[in-house]
Structures are given as C-alpha cells and as structure tokens.
Length: 169
Length: 169
Image (tube, rainbow over all chains, first blue to last red; front, side, top):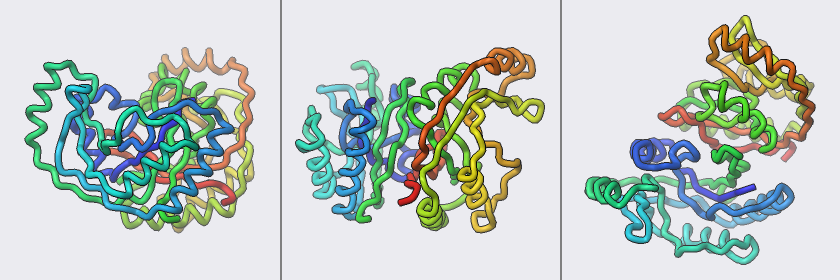
C-alpha cells in the first residue's frame, strides 16, 4: 500500500487553503490540506508497524514548533503547483532529514521547500491567470504544530490516517 | 467545531465497504468507512484538549479486540441506512458506554448497534432494490482493532483526524 507522512495544520488554515483548493486543486477531494514531510511510498502491513515505531521515536525527539506562512508562491516553471509558502525552520528541516534518510528509504526527488498546495494540474494559461491574482494576497499566519500523521491511501485514491504522533511525547 | 469518535477498520475492509459506498452512500466523499463510537457533537479547541486527554485514559484501559462482520443489514423502516453489521462484543459495548457517559455529554439518540454504513439517503424504492440484492451477500470477515480516532469536520464537510489512540498503550 501507499503511505506518506504529513502535517495537517489547524482547522482554520485548512479551511483557508480549501477555499482555493476547491477551485484549483485536482486532489481537493482526496486529502485535506497538508504539508508533506515524506512523499508517498510503497510499503506493506508488517513494515507499517516498523515505520510507526520509528516515527514514535522521532516524535519524542522533537518539540512542538511554530509554522509561519506569509505568501502564496508557485513552482512554475518546474510545475504548475501553487502553494502557501511555509517558512523553512530548523525543526522542519530536521524532520525532513530524519524522515528522508537511509532507514526509511525512498529518498526525495526534490530539495525540501515546505509548502501547503492550494492549486495543481493547472494548464499554463490557467496557472498564469490564477497565480497573477493569488500572488498579491496578503497572508500573515503563525500557528503551533504539535503533531504529524502517517497516512495510507485507499483503493479509491482517498488518504486516511493510520496514526498521529505527538511531538515531544 | 464538530467532532466525533470512530474506528477505521483495516484498509481491506474499507476498500470493500467503499465498493458499495461509491454507489449508495451520500457521504462517500466526506469520510472513509468507519464504525461510529460517538456521533458528531459540538466542541471548541480548549475542550478538544480535554477530550483528547480523556480518550488517552480510556484507550489505556482497553485492549485490542476482534471485530467481526458477517452480514449486510438495514435500519429500515427507522431509516434507509444499509450497513455491514458488526457483531456486538463486550469491548465495543464498553467503549460505547464510556464514550457516551456523563463526562462527555451529548448522550446518544439511539441504542448502540455497531455498524459500518455502506448506503444512506436512499429513497424507499432505491433502498428496497439495493437491499434485496445486498442482503444475500455472504460476508465472513474478522480483524483485530487496535486503535480509534478523534475526528473534526472541516468547513467543506470533510472529516479529518485530530488524533489516534492506541488500545492498551
């Protein structure tokens, strides 16, 4: 099965992100707004138990931290993904490194740019049109992140939560 | 915000339930297949922290248990809900009692009939048609449940997981 590791921000920030995703994100109905810590990879039920144990250890070693977002950016021209830019912090970098190191396998394809996607699968002209408006949006949001989630994908494409991990516990 | 407490069964059982829900369940896209332990109720972020602490205590006092389903039933004529009937067990009854007792408030409207919904919002004739086929389905499935989940509802109606609680831990 496919699994992934994400942060779900507060309900407030998810509702804000969904107000854009509803129109612009082709994966709107498959997963709530999230910051990906480790992209989807294939595993099985036995490995899932091991992964869960490792994540518990990692969660214990990290304390809750501040997540800050203050603008809407785009990965264009690499791809037409529009996102809430999340300020890189030592904590986020640390997570990403640990979760994408040797023991988990599946090294990342990209450098880590913390973000919450709000638009994807847009044509070039759609992207240009939407992003020209959204880039002007003033955003100023900070919140405390105290947990992350291990997800698995159902056969219909929808992601569900296998387990939550509380930071510093 | 609205919160609720559910068991998500294994991916296998969820995929099976979704094969029906896709056609017959009006809430297919809002929440994965689940067994409701406590129906949706209103709370706020401070209370959520208290609820989470209580659920941790309850989870510690209960060990993983077997969930068995062997037929498709219906709540008709009370309502036109079709479901995977889950055999009542002392563990499920115990959970239900603890989660629906005084300290949580919001006493349940119905007696506890453990089930996983696969069809709802059906007209009388749709219900009669669908159920006459599904009631003949032979099902024989048993699995171990080792966790339950506290959910909250986003503004778009989709439920997300706030926290998972591991039984006996």
